[in-house]
Length: 461
Length: 146
Image 1 (tube, one colour):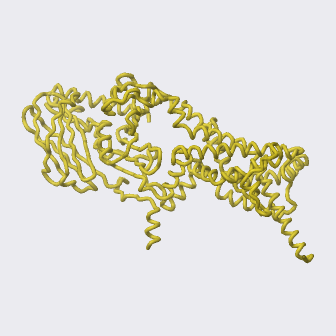
Image 2: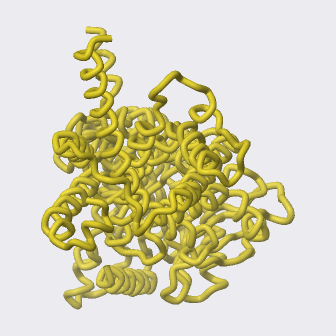
Image 3: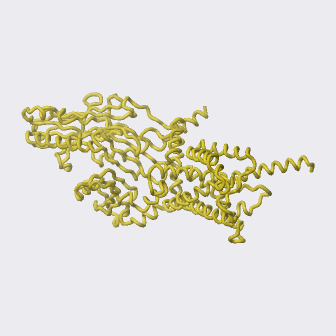
C-alpha cells in the first residue's frame, strides 16, 4: 500500500472516529437527562396497556351484571330511575354496550361532583360509582401524559422526553451499526457469557434496543398527535393537505347547534305577558326528545354499539352520539337536533383523510388495542426493553469507572462537531422542543461551560 | 388519472354545507291549531324540508298523541301529504288536559320526530303556561352556569 493510501485511510478512519465520538457525546448527554423520564413513561405505559384486564378485575362488580335478563330497560327508563333514586343527579351521557352482560355506563353530576355510574340494564339498579379521575388507570394515564403533576409544563416535558427518545434511538442505531466485519454476536445477539462485564452490559443495552427500535419509533410517533406542540403541527399538516378528519368528526371537538328554534314562551303565548283572558287552548314550544328516540334514529343509521349518547347542553345544544370501539374502522360521530332528531352531521371512519386514519390506527396501536393481546405484549416488551436499555446504560457507565461525569470527550474536529450539531438542528426543526433544547445546550456550552474551568473539565469540553 | 383517484382516496370526505355550515339535513316546522275545541277535529301538520326543498313522498308519516305523563295511552294517526313536504292529520281531543304530539316522518335515510306540548281547557292552559315558564327560567339559569 502506498503512503498516500495509508494516509487517506488514516484520515477517513479519523473522521469516522470523530463522528462516532460526537454522536456518542450527544447520545450520552441525552440519555443522562432523559432516561429518568423515559423510565417513568415506559413503566406507566406498560401498566396502562393492560387497563382492560386490570380494570375488568378491579371493577368487575360494576362493569359486569350478575344476572343477564331477557330484555334490557330502555336508556330513558334507566336515566329516569337513576334521577329519581338520587335527587340532584343529572345524567350527562350514557354508553350503550355491545355485550349482554355489560352494565350501562353513565357520566353523571351528583351534587356538583362529576362521577361515573354503572347501572344494571335489566333492573336499573346502580352497581356502583367511580370518580373517573381517581381510577387505577387514570393515575397511570396521568403519570404517562403529565408525570402526575399535570399542567402544560409537565405535558411539554413528556413531549420533550419522547422527542429526545427519537434522537436517542437514531444516535444509538448509529453507534450500534457494525463497523468491521459484520458479526452476529454483539449486533443481533447479545454476548452474555461474562455476566457483569462491560461487554455484557453493552450488549444488553444495544442489542435489545436495536430489536425494539422500530416498535419504539412507531410507539413514540403514534403518541405524538396527543402532544401540545408536535400534535398541533401534525394537525396543521393534516388540515393543509386535506387528509385530516372532516369537521365535527370527534365528540370532544366543536359541536353544531340545534337548528329547530325553541321559541320563548312569550312568543307562543303572547296573551301570557299581556294579561289577556286565558284562552281555551294553547300550544307550547318544542319539547326536547328523549334518549330512546335518539337511540332509535341512531340504530337506523347503522351505528354499531358500543356508543355514547351525550345530552344537549342548553337550549341550542345537540345530542352527540359517538362510538367507543376498541379498534378503529367503525368510528362514527353524529350530532342530532335535540328537538327534531334530525341528523345534522354524521362523520364515519370512511370519511377521514389518510392522516386521520393513520393517527387513529396509531393511537390504537399505542394503547395496545389494535390486535388484541399480541399488541399489548408487544407494547409491554417495548416498555421492558426501554427500561432495560436505560438501566444497562448506567452499568456501562459505571464499568468505565469515570472520573467526574465521564462524558465521552469532545472530538478534535470542529467541522465534525458543527456538522453533527447541524444534523441535530435538522431534527430540531421537525421536533420544535428538541430544536429549542439544542439551542439552549449550544448557548450554555458557548457562554457558560467553556468559560468556567471546572465545568469545562467536568463536561469534557 | 390513476394518481388523482389514489390521492382523492387519501383526502377527507367533506360534505357540501349550507349557510349554517352544516351538510344537507332535515328541518321541521310542527304546527298546532290555534284553537282546539273538545270533540272537534282539528288539523295538525308538519312541514319538512331537506336542503330548503320540501321532503316529498315520505316513506312513513304519522302523528302520535298522548296525554302528559301517560305515554302508554298514545294514539297513532297516519298522516297524508297535504301539499309538497307538508304532512297533516285531522285529530280530535276528547278531554281537557295537557297533551303531547309527536310527528314521525321518515325519508329515504332520514327521520325527524319533533314533539310539541299543547293544552285544551283553561285550567290546562294555565298549567301549561306555568310549566313552560318554569322550564324557561330553569333553562336560563342553567345556561347562566356555562
